[in-house]
Image 1 (tube, one colour):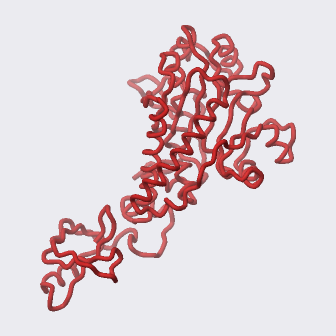
Image 2 (cartoon, rainbow, N blue to C red; image 1 turned 180 degrees about the vertical axis):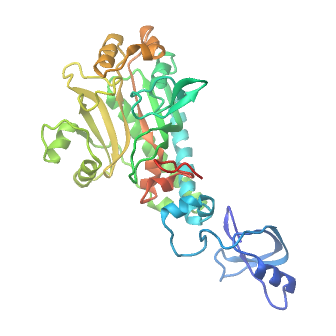
Image 3 (tube, rainbow, N blue to C red; image 1 turned 45 degrees about the vertical axis):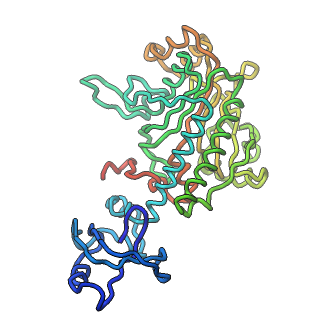
Length: 398
């Protein structure tokens, strides 16, 4: 018998157990919901060291046969089959363990943010205008007017800096209409966003982010150990400061010095192999990206003494990007120049720009992928396994 705490052995003994219970259990299909009353006693042969000798049993809900997907069987099933019958798949203890890990990560993240004076906020997910244009946004009909699902809380986080909130975080869904069919992309995902006011440069942001990651992993490990979750002993130990590697050095390591292009997944993987070996740390920052690579990110701060670069970074783990962020442009005139250079109509950003007209402090922040983090920590082959009911280019049910 299985419940949320694990598996309990129910032992029926000839001569000691009511014969009607033998018949009842023999006729009950797997995955039926049952209630059992009995005596708990020690049993060294049982999985948990105890067994239940039943005195009464009742079938609360009988499962149909055959099952569309095995739960106790060791024979594997294709991921599509598992996701098509996700409610059955989620009954597997090994799958449940993934979401215990995710729960522990959320606890660790919130605890780490709150201990550093952050306020948890909730920003709108229905927008008139996105942070990065409409090319990768989901359009919706909003009372006969066009609207979009949020790609990120970026613009609202910045507006809150002007409102005096100074430190905010949000853990919420985000949506990207990118036609990606990879094991690392989803159309609906959970983003862990943070924003901080009164910074000097992006390294102020990086120091907070690496501390939050470090503390979160420690808290997560302790929680999982208390639950007896096997992932507790598999979590990496984060050791700040994480290495900082400028983009120009990355291109030299890739054998393409002087190149100005976004790093592909293959580039990131190759870099990861080199950098983890070189620095001995699975976590590292890629910094100082070319402005040409981030031109669509109009809110990114260009260096005054070298405007061909932005004070932005990625946080990677063994060749996989987990987070992206940096120093934002808080000066109104420079922000307007960035917006025009990105080909965005300032009229569509009126509410956002008002925050900059009436006093905006220097600030910066990041967006962090919770699904990707769960995926790498659980060593899952596909990011879809990190969400209860994943959404991708083709999957909208169950």
